[in-house]
Length: 135
Image (tube, rainbow, N blue to C red; front, top):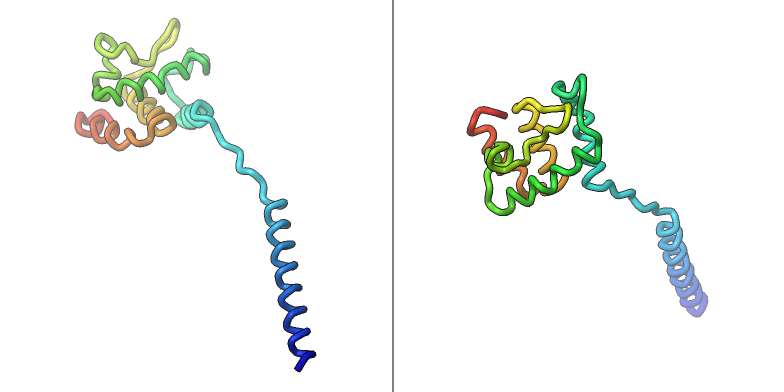
């Protein structure tokens, strides 16, 4: 009887030690997933979008990164996608010295910006643009 109790106790101790060892190994082996900044996510999406308006001249990354947070701020204040992209109202239309963006591509940029910077507003923006037939 004593042999079984000792064997059971030894098995329990071995299991506990193995469990601790396993958890430590798992923790040590786990690698942190690199986080991608909002800006990098936006620029990557823009690169994949291949904006035709910028074939001959387009914005620098820093210049382009000026838009998404401002778009999100304006949308969060209750402004519409139309307001954000109407130059005489929102003053947030993506254009600069020597480069511009066709409206359909500006709509696409606005959606990409919301996906990266304020994803909770993406459905609203997409619905507004679709309702106008411009997306």
